[in-house]
Image (cartoon, rainbow, N blue to C red; front, side, top):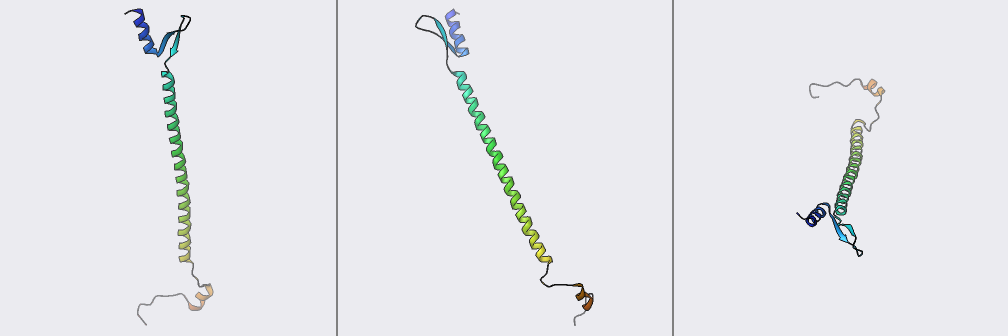
Length: 109
């Protein structure tokens, strides 16, 4: 393999090209492959980070909504249960003393 072919092969492997400047000196120029790879990796990282942050925020909002709905449901259920227990009639111990302890009848009057 000739030295020129080796230079071309090496330049293809590394992404650098040897060019001549106007004063006949060689200098290397990057083809930008590394820059493209870095930008692509950065865009993937940013997209993934944004997705994970968005999912975290949505799950937090959903969790807070579920807690508030559950609290509202428990409060409503407890209020209904207390309404069943409390009666509108005032009952006192004197009423029990006057009328006696209620008993069940076995026959109809």
